[in-house]
Every structure is written in C-alpha cells, then in structure tokens.
Image 1 (cartoon, rainbow, N blue to C red):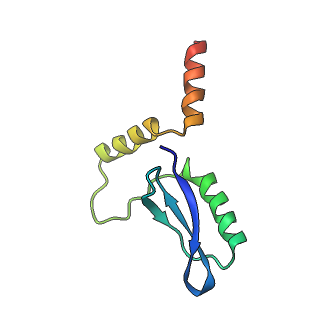
Image 2 (cartoon, rainbow, N blue to C red):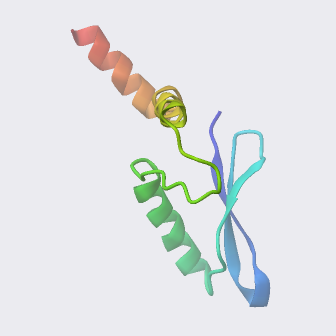
Length: 94
C-alpha cells in the first residue's frame, strides 16, 4: 500500500501538501506554503524526518508502555517496500 504526497491549492493563492495512503485517504495536511517550490522543499523535509521522528504525545490521554509497544510494532511491520526487501536480503545472507 504505497502512499503519496499531493500538492493542493491552499488559502491566499498558496499551496498545501496532503499526505495520502494507498487508498487515497488523507493522513495529514500541511500548513500553507507561498510557492510550489517551497511546498516541494517541504515534501523533501517531511521525507527526511518522517522515518526517524520521535513520537511526542501532547494529547490529554496518558502515554503508556503499551502504546509505545504498538508504535514500535507498527514501525517494524509497516516499512517501505525497499526496506522490506533489504531486510529479507540480509536475513538470507545469515
């Protein structure tokens, strides 16, 4: 299930970035960028930090060890296709 970034019109003639899952559902929407070029740079920045970014829980609920395990579990099992291939290749060499 490959997701994708989508450039969309934003307020005041700006641009926004929609992050969509493989079925086209919106997972996240960015702030407004003044130009397409700055929106594309925003996508590049998102790509750089998304894979390694920590989770900071600022919600009203309590962060528990079970939530941390769930987040870790999701990270392990929802890797990009290129990463799954890399992991399988390394396992085959052992």
